[in-house]
Amino acid sequence: MRRYGKNPDEDDIRVRPNRKGNRPRTNIRPKHEDASEGMVLTVDRGRLTCLVGDRTVIAMKARELGRKAAVVGDRVALVGDLSGAKDTLARIVRIEPRDSVLRRTADDDDPYERVVVANADQLAVVTALADPEPRPRLIDRCLVAAYDGGLEPLLVLTKSDLAPPDELLEMYGALGVPYIVTTREEFVDGRAADRVLEHLAGRTTAFVGHSGVGKTTLVNALVPEERRRITGHVNAVTGRGRHTTTSALALPLAVEGGGWVIDTPGVRSFGLNHVDPTRVINAFPDLVPGTEDCPRACSHDEPDCALDAWVEAGHADPARLLSLRRLLATRERRDGD
Image (spheres, rainbow, N blue to C red):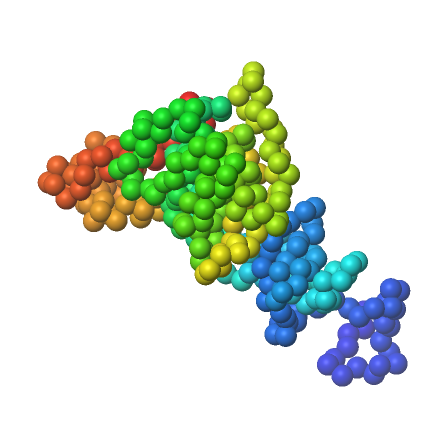
């Protein structure tokens, strides 16, 4: 076999022709320093609608991003045709680091986590007090996901003319979660939207809720010029609503200070397999110092947990510890419990 040195005679080298006529592939990727900044508004079958300046642009994810997916709320860098004209397509070449992430799994045994929304400041958990009946375990799971992902929770209780909110509010009183209680009449005359807007200005708020609770109807009232499909009626037999929002969508608020609302599909379950209990405790700053003497890998719900002594010494309200343990225990329960 003939061996060649560093500088062989080119006449002696047999070069296999490139039948495709293109350049050989390289691992060096462009930095796209001239890419424009945008925000993902919605995702539909591989096409992403992004806001670039004051234009709405349709884009696709660049191949070099691999399996990394962009979600609603992501800040992205785009290249290509950014005119927003019909039948044009841009390319997302970079996804910027996220400030917060709302994630869920299909169930507690599912190892695959799904990012629902990125970079939201607040999670509005919408639940009806009747028709359909409230599901406290689902609310608990949404709260855990909010605390784990770095979002501040907000409870929006609807249909208070059908059932009183006292029992539900008492359950979450120790958590200090802000709340809004509305009636069906307030949904019709717009008062519900006005009251909710007071908590949304200048923030990005993701709305989640069980189907049929009025979530999308509320979002439609908050952003009337971006009207979504009106919610379907609640099934009288199952007590469940018909899904009317099939993909998350970010909508701008026309209020002083701006802001965004993100409508998400109605959920029937909210798996927490991805949640690290050590991050949930950070939502209870009055209890965090008491964990310093906890044993390694403490679940904060076992006989040797130092939080019991911390509370008994008067450093925190016992109701706060009970609330923390109830939230952490939601991973061991099913949503329908």
